[in-house]
Length: 93
Image (cartoon, rainbow, N blue to C red):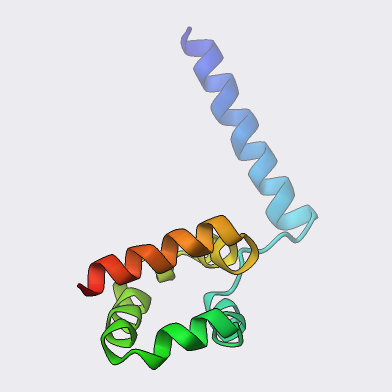
């Protein structure tokens, strides 16, 4: 059992090293994603509401919008986008 766990951890480490150093795979840059998000029409409409804008800016500082993978999802997928919009509207009430 211990050998199996150790083998899985070693394989995971090995795969991560290959991705980062051999394939030069990098994590997405949050600032680039924020710029792309700010170009979205639906996002601009959200920022027109002063109350929502305040909550969105707070979320950028220490909320969901700090996660680059989540920001990519709300840009690309309509379901995640609608969920984010509803979340922000509920939070602003």
